[in-house]
Length: 349
Image 1 (cartoon, rainbow, N blue to C red):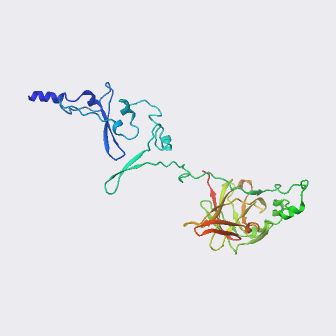
Image 2 (cartoon, rainbow, N blue to C red):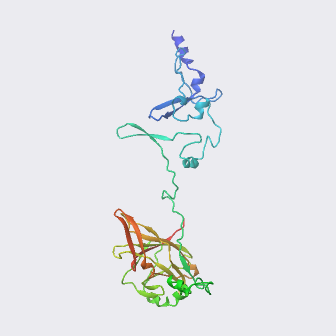
Image 3 (cartoon, one colour):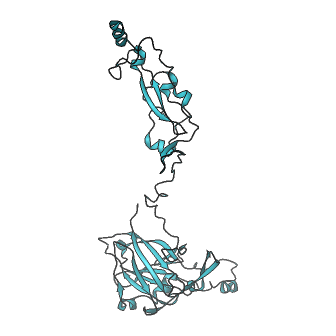
């Protein structure tokens, strides 16, 4: 009798069952399941099998992924054979799969994950992938877009040599355009050699630095109106041939409004090289960590002879205002003749 039982233990279990592999998975209710992966008859066994049950004991029916798994079952469980063929469908690109929200082609269900809460309960939650771009996530700096502006240079701009046929001089006078002339030429007649005696702000290259235009700042009668101003020394051309200036104007409590700057770039002899006006500033409202401010991005060209930057405002700019929405309703922020500016060299991504 003992010999018979021993023989039965040695031959117990079928060859197909011994060569089968198994995988575990979790359904949408958090239950752990085990399913069999049948192998080809001529494949090598996964492990050295040991007798599992006597011949007389009937093996339970295999549990397949089709009966238990939510959504689409693995291809191996559906076909009865593992699919080892290397294709993009079987082995999708990881980055593309992430962009697709970890949903494979042909799958209709959303992916989900399980987790255990503080009380030890298994929870199941649908996985919602973050499909925002790297720029939207803040991991990558957005591309720099230069702010629109009117740029005046020597020999450029101004009114046409002769008025067009049929023009009305009275209409031009009403619009304030009866004497447009050469804007840059008119500006250079009243600027800027005398500004060389003014104190200069040194350029700080590794961070945003402040330039305060206060009531104590020097004042000059520009062709665009009398204005306080500040002179900033630009970095040398051999260090920064050209770069983008990020310019911010803050609505501080002391100024009572926003300073709308215009820019004039000077050469080493304090002669104007380029005049930038009517800059299309963007507006950012006040938050818990920063004051409201205007901002713009302006190119700077030290390699073209631009050695100094003069920050000033025009009479026409001080006539405007910015209206912002708050919890108490719309609030108008006037444009004023003083303010605090932030300057920073921007590194292109």
